[in-house]
Image 1 (tube, protein in one colour):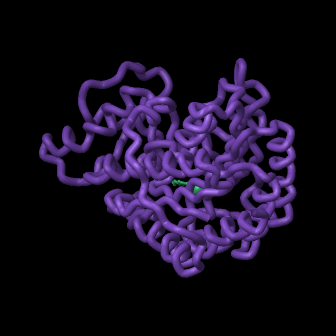
Image 2 (cartoon, helix red, strand yellow):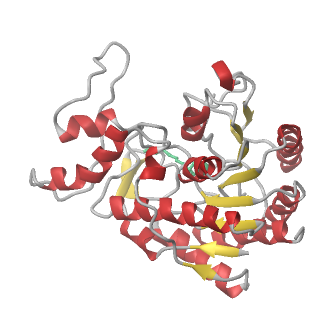
Length: 343
Ligand code: OKP
Ligand code: ZN
């Protein structure tokens, strides 16, 4: 299987996030993608290609222009005010506050953010545009006839909605990939999100559409991040009604429960009969993940890949979460190898 990868992910290197009352080093670190790449190479998964530049047009197919312009200019505006540290929001436009876009860069940062755990840094823009190019180049390769391609995207994307960042995500790489498939002639695309956290951003982007089926298996937002979306009764809206499936599971769910739920989701994908599949591949469902609470083992990820491969669909995998850094490569590449057994 081909892997698409860019070193530019390293430019996104936040310093700290607030954990248990203190600033701790960010969980979402460059070493995550480095470890995955190392495993891709040592296991001989296949060739590793650099992304091609695709410009902003495919990004603007799923993201708001004002939001994209904010991300493009924010660091320059932030440092012009003498601030040389990571930009983090400290308030939100909550109930009954005015919804107008603030003028000040700090106000705009608050306006365009979902949480305070997603540092905007000097290298955020080059890193996120490179990640979008990684996802788009994976789609080029699917269009050229590959059956499965691995977009080694970092930072992740599934929490990023049409017009906000959050959960370490800025551009929604999987959504950009899915839209690109449609723009190249696919009629229906499914996105399967197996990250521990609900893919609220992806759901947001396609909630009113029937040309993208979104399915997410995740820790129940009643107790897990992102808390405000990802419940089982969110089925889509308007034309999109019936094209959104959330499978929230209690944090302590067994592996058997997780795979039974995967089986249900795969059944819906078969029923939809899409032309292609995008997988939001988070491996933070791993038993050793430091911020998540499912208990998949490394060999379970092989099974996961096999079952996805059993769909027989052209498939692009976009890397999302996974914070047990040392085994992240083993876990991610196990999924890809399991998938490849069906080729
Ligand atoms: C990203 B992905 C707030 C941070 C809360 C955020 C978890 C994001 C997970 N200071 N934790 O879905 O793996
Ligand atoms: Zn996650």
